[in-house]
Image (cartoon, rainbow over all chains, first blue to last red; front, side, top):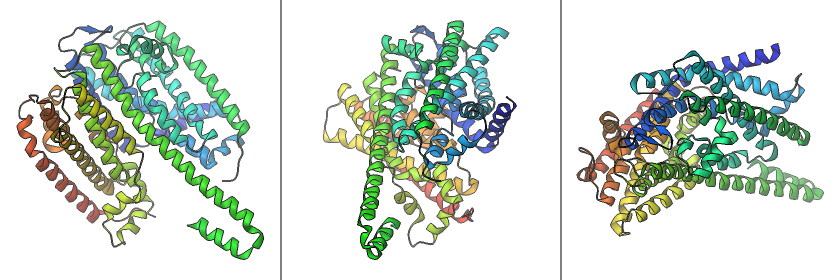
Amino acid sequence: MSALTGLFRAGFRHQAAFRFALVSGLLTNTFFGLVRTAVFLAVYRSRDEVSGLELADAITYVWVLQAVFATVWAPWLHEFPTRVRSGEWTAELTRPGAVLPRHLAYDLGRTAAVLVLRAPLPLAFAAVVFDLHLPTGIAGVLALLASLALAAFAASCLRLLLGAIAFWTPDFRGVTSLLFGPIFLVSGFVIPVEYFPHALRTVATLGPLGALIRAPVAVATGRLVVGSLVLQVAWAALFALACHLVLRRATERMVVFGG
Amino acid sequence: MGDTTTRSTLAATLPSSVPVALVLASASVRSFSSSLRMNVLRTLGASVLVWSEALAVIFLLTAFDGIAGWSTAEVLLLLGIADAGLGLGMLLGEPLEPPTFSQLLRDGRFDQVLTRPMSPLLWVIVNDVQIRNVGRVLAGLAIATGGAGAAGVSLTPAAVALVLGAITAMATIVVAILAIGAAITMWTIEGTEVLNAFTYGGATLSGWPLQIYSSALRAVFLWVVPVGAAVYLPTLRLLDREGIGIANQDLLPALPLLVAAFCALAVVAWKAGLRHHTGAGG
């Protein structure tokens, strides 16, 4: 266990070291937040509520999304598959302990650094400038933190699954680039899933991708808090199981040519 | 290059090396077809990304019945032009993107470029054309065409020229932004994500009617980094719509001037960057 906490802390320090990237990231997130806010201010000008969302819910969605964006679409997304393709990753198999917990501990450390360093400022900025729908009580805040942590875990697993494509094909960038669009849309990174047509909305809400951004936004705005958290826990467990199975299958079939 | 040499040496020295040569030859064919397959996949992927965005716009504006008096089809016209322009700009300028250009500087490869009798900017651009951006261009064109058709724009030569002109203007500004970004990278060495706010962010912003933004945001993307002007002004003419404030059809003739002024700024920045550049390793 102490090895895993060590890896978590190392991952955290690794990602926290990029100060310049942090400032750039914060400015970029804030800019995209302003553009998206303008879109919702415009569409809600003559409406109070659409698909169960009020203006404050939509604006909260925008800024929670900007706050967690880099925890899902992490800048190191391609590092793992690149190491798999080069053969460098095989060194992981010579290290003591199970591979998956070590991988996740380090990745979660990096994700935690991004969350801690990049989420609070844009959210605080938005909360001052706009009318957000954020929890005010202790229970609500704790629920939001739990939901963000579960989303980060699901994102970490999703990145591992996408990266594992490199075990099967050296064209991993080609395959993942085909998946990014649909994942982006269905998880709700372009618009809230509430505005989707009914069938797609159900899939997006109950499916695994709902754990990434839909659930934290629902918890932040106090809609279906318990249900969203339960779904997130269930999907986190299934994500971890999928990672375990995929990684086992991948290491079984892997042939090392050199490196 | 190395492959060819190895192969010819083998063939000359070992009469029994024909099978080896065949293996090597087939490996090189496989490596080419594999990179071809990857390029095809990534081109499709870039296209799918734009279509996903368009789908989201359709869902949102269907739920809300348009935005600021603009119909879904009219907004899709904006989005298509913005994305086609971004794709065309990236097709030329992607090697200038901060992470790529930063790597070029840190590897010392850029120092070698400077010794060649060729414009370093041109070398960086043509050295690594990312063909997948064609996917973004084609998806953008298709969405713009569909949006224009659905919005009732008739397909006259003037309309086609307006769309192509808008796409060219957008692409030119994107390359200029990337050149400014590369100049900044010559100072910072580490690349900065802030440039994304102007390239990808600029395309996102200009994919919506400009009147939804605050006057400050509008002013920046009209006068300083004119991506807003490049997409919005020609679209106003196509749809024969009123703009907002000074950003209306009357400003359209000034668009080439705005683009030229921004390009001049980029050239000054790039030259200043080159003067400052002292090498970063290698």
